[in-house]
Image (cartoon, rainbow, N blue to C red; front, top):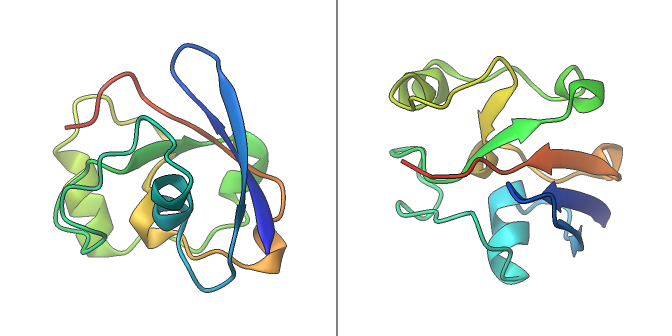
Length: 106
């Protein structure tokens, strides 16, 4: 299990427990965290689960795949630490992960 902190665009913080082997997207959906739409259901074919990973955590994640980069390139609100939450697997090493949610999902 890992605790993940979602910081919504309005500054509201939600901390959830996520099961290892799931994804950050699933953790948000399972805990009804507003701000993650996940229109494609985690297939990495949209960008509606976009998150901005806190600077302290970005280096602890595996690099984004070419497919993820392609989806993120379609997002006008992309930032250097942008990731698709469906592509971030939950592990013990991510206990305490902090992600910020954008105002809009595209």
